[in-house]
Length: 458
Image (cartoon, rainbow, N blue to C red; front, side, top):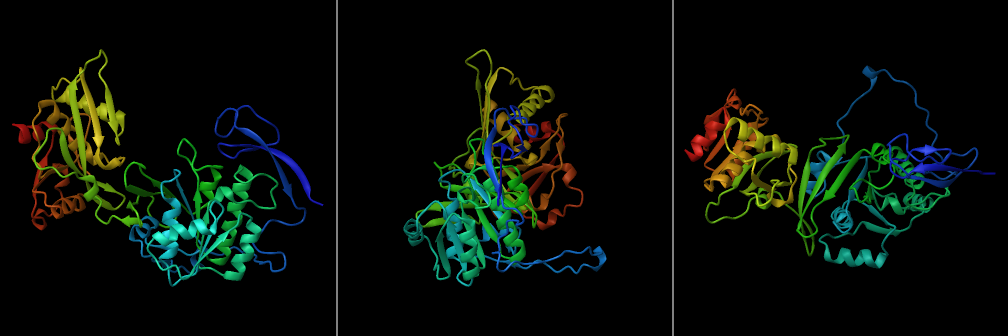
C-alpha cells in the first residue's frame, strides 16, 4: 500500500516543512507555505524507466588520474546565436531550462529549433497547446520539420512510454509547470510536482544521453516559477527577455555548466519567426544625420562579444525642489557616483540639475567600460555641445577622476574600426602591451576625466 502524507512547501524557494510556518526559515518570505498531499509508493522509487525494464547501475569510486576525458561532443545547430549562448552547441545529456515572460517567444524559439534539425529526430511535448495550434505556428516558421514529432501530453509516465517507442535525439517540453507525475499527489505546477517532474527528466537525460529543453514560466518578479532548486538541478538556465513593444529579443545565459554564463544572443521577431542578429551594433546604434548633444557611443563587451552601444543623456534645470535622477538600462547608483565625480573632481554643478540617462536598444548594461561614454554624454548635454559622430569611448571612471583600464581592449578597438569609427578614447593604462600599428583607427589615450573634456570641448 502507498503511504500518504501531507507536507507544507514554501512557494518561493521550495522549502519543505512538516507543519505550517508563518515565515520561511530558508528564504525569509512570509505567508508562502501551502499544504500539499504527497504520495510515495513503498518499496519503489520513481524512475523514468518502466518497472519491466529498469536500468541497474552501480557507481564505484575511481581515481581522478584514471578517468579518461574526451572533448564533449556538441550538436551544432543552424541557430548560431543559440550555439554561442550554449557555449558552442548542444551537449548530449544536458538539461536546459528556458524562462521568459508570457508571449515573449519561448515556444517560437524552441519550435523553430525543432524544425531546423532535419537530420535529428525531435520530440516536442506540449501541455499548453493542441496539435492543430502547434501546426498553425509551424506553417509560418521556416524549416522542413520532417523529423519533428508533436506530443500533447502532461503525464510523465505516458511521455516516457512514447520516448521509449520513438527514441528521439532531442526532447523539448513546453512547459515544465504543466507536467505531473503519478508518484506525487498534488496539482500540476505545484512545488513538489515541478521538482519531481524535473528530477525524472534529469534522470532520463543523464542515463540516455539525450538533451532535454524545458520551457519554464516566470513569476511577476522575473524569477523562474517553482522551487529555487529547479535552477540548481538543470545544467543550463537561459533567460529569454525583451520588450514586447519592440521587435528585438535577447537570449541570455544565467547559468551554464558547459560554457560561459555571460554570453547572449540577439534575435529579431518577424512574421515568419525569429531572425538571428549577427551584428548587434546595428540595433544599438541609431542613424543620425547630424551630431546631437548628449549622445555618445561606447565600446562594451557582453561575454566574449564586443559591441558598440549608444548612451543618451539629458541634463536640464530642475523644476522642483529635489532634482530627478533616472536611468534606463544602467545602474542608478553608479550614475549617481559618476555625477559626484564630475562635481567634486571637475567642478561641474549638477546637484541642482535633472539628469536622465538612457541606453539605446532596450539593453541593460553592467560593463564599467561605458563609464567614460556616459560622463561625456552628460557634459555634452549640460554644455549643449555635440560630440562628433565618428568618436567612441572605452574606459572605467574611478572615484578620483582617473580613467581606469578595461579588459579585452583589442576587441573593442577592432569592433569600432570595423564599423567605421575614426577615433576611440581609451585609458593610457591600456596602452601597455597594445600594438597600435595593427589598427587604422586613431587611438587617443587619456589618464583623467579633465584630459577628455579638454580634448573634446576645449
